[in-house]
Amino acid sequence: MHPAAEHSPLGKSSEYIATYTPSLLFPIPRTAKWAELGLTAETLPYKGVDFWNCFELSWLLPSGKPVVAIGEFSIPADSPNIIESKSFKLYLNSLNQTAFADNASLEATLVKDLSAAAGKPVGVRIRRLQEVEAEGVVALPGVCIDDLDISVSNYEHPRPELLRCDESRTVEESLHSHLLKSNCPVTSQPDWGSVAVEYRGAALDHASLLEYIVSFRQHSDFHEQCVERIFLDLQRLLKPEKLTVYARYVRRGGLDINPYRSTEEVQLPNHRLVRQ
Image 1 (tube, rainbow, N blue to C red):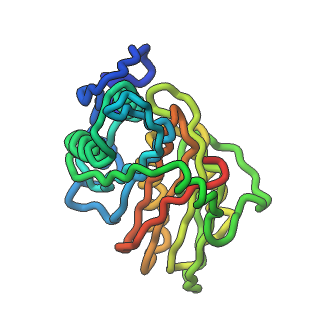
Image 2 (image 1 turned 30 degrees about the vertical axis):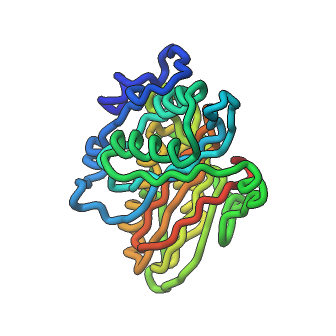
């Protein structure tokens, strides 16, 4: 377990607080998990963002009439802290019986509080239901590798030694799988996700990538660190000219978490998949 997480509200009984309480937010430093991966804030080999989407966002107008919307929050991948997910939900719930003059006032409040918790500016978009509904759901790009015939016997921890490539060939391709699963390091509850890999480098053996992804099945870690581990293992193997790894996780408690890590400064999409 992350040393800070045991002091968080995750896995504990929590009171429902329905009026604005920013102190509910519980930041967890990224440094311990970076150190596990051999990284520091100064040596991160990727750029990126963690998209959080909230489907249970509600507050009051000055008249007392309630409003519902969908919140999109983008937390920089190099921010000093992640925000523990249950504390995030409790904080958002504390808006339920709180009146805001307009959307701009709510957005400013969210930016202030979330940026303070993350330690870097957090992007906030308050989205109307009709807008998100019109976007629909999308498919991940490239080739889905889930139908490949593989044999699996290890599910306890990620196994980068399973990954294979053909160094004599350089390819540029996009691959994805919906078989990513890991466990919450605090509650041991399952986290379900889809993962995409886009790269230019030594030709990656597709079956070995699927075997590797499945090896996360009983691994305990936060969403962000799973994606960072996949990125680093592929970077070491492929020595790519460019590499992007991202995962779209199934929501829990009205929140989904979608970490993106890339060697490139790219305009990253935040589009829902069918399981989201």
